[in-house]
Image (tube, each protein chain N blue to C red):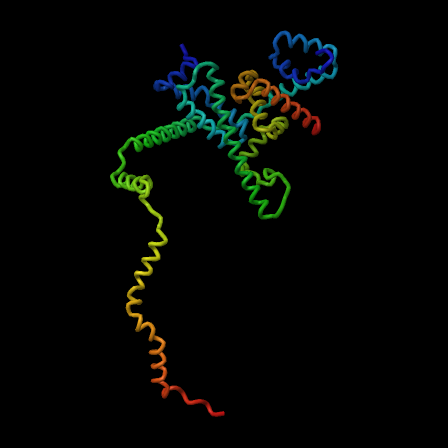
Length: 192
Length: 162
């Protein structure tokens, strides 16, 4: 009989050989897909999803089994992604601040002044081919809203699970989702 | 709820996440309110589109992914093992001696004193005592210099004739 995710996680905690590899195989595609949905960068998504697996390996013993394994793991994963976003934003702010000093006073948002991050043209074409208009607009949402939309509409997580993953209340998840979808509807209406 | 629009409940209504009582109230409101009914339909269509058109991420090679992950994990595990080992290892004698000396210097009260200004003055004075002992010579230094100039007067150049 096939082991459940929760049993495998406990096996990882007791360092049973093969348990970790089995969990990775089960979750690698979902982890990479969620990370990519939040970060929209292949290398970052690869890096963050791998980092989430490493953290899973390190903290498997702390999985108490109060929530599903998938919810617990997604929380680790989304935390990695949001940390990465914050680092990226901090770097852009720094670059924006330097530009502002060089060009004199400027009231524009430093993030807007930052140069666009380098993307491989082939990757970019590939990504654009895959992106529909509505998902291109999802890209413009805040990281938390984007994570809520991804987990809800793409991964099919319930509000209570998204709340655990994002470490916020269910009411906050509802607010994120409502604002995100209302924004998308408005922009699609404006542009359509 | 019948008189108040139910916009903030509509997404949960579409997702089927309302408890039975709330769902019944929203249903009742939707029957009577064209705006909220239209809004619910737009939310439902948008969520369906989001689920249907979610772009797949760029493809990656899963074998390489797992190999890289395994390598990172081993690096991390061996890195932390090295840290613990180095913490457990006895400190080299030189570093230990240095630490003891540092503790003695900083830990013992009065071990390092700030210089006393009076003692500093005394030291300077003591270095000048030898000069004071030969005060007679020092006082005549100007006179000796004058003698030297007088002795060399005949060697001065002739004044120019206009």
